[in-house]
Image 1 (tube, rainbow, N blue to C red):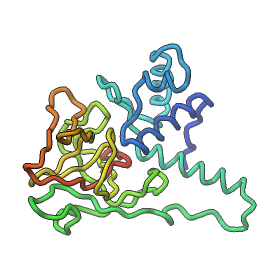
Image 2 (image 1 turned 30 degrees about the vertical axis):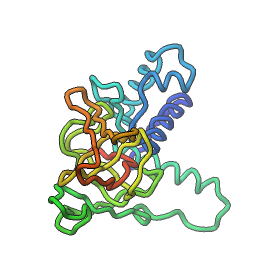
Image 3 (image 1 turned 120 degrees about the horizontal axis):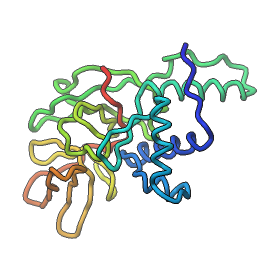
Image 4 (image 1 turned 135 degrees about the horizontal axis):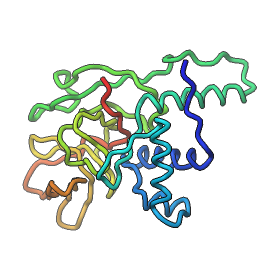
Length: 230
């Protein structure tokens, strides 16, 4: 059994900040945001720590993007398992440690969505996958296979698996799965006075403006991201 990567106190602090940001907003922080949060003098200091974390395999860096930080599923699983063991050893409870895989969360993987059909319709489900529930701050209802690169600059790449919690409303700045007419898209949500904007995270793509002239619904909220390793 492989040992989990050993992190310094500062590396652990940065890793926790990255994971918290992804869990709460669906996107990793920028280097500048990490520097501001931890009191570094420049974003370069944050970059050095991120490079060290990448070398230890607990994060992956995507070049050329301001938010190009991703959490590999395998590394997170190892870290969470190590945390469970540490917590159990500190506990006075008289129960055995949980067996690996006992508390797995089974989620349907949604592929292409047919026009007019509910997103969780049986014909959209490609497979079922088991994941660690502790990967997510909020419990997801399904995984959606990402198509295209419109959210590239927040580290959401073509083929990745986006963990989605079903909901019908969102706050400004959150990353959502939205249905516009017969199309389903992943974008950052912003509600304005006269319309709703669905914002890409890639300058090669234009924002989508939603008015009352076409059917629109929020299908869910992004609560995590798994790099496709299947």
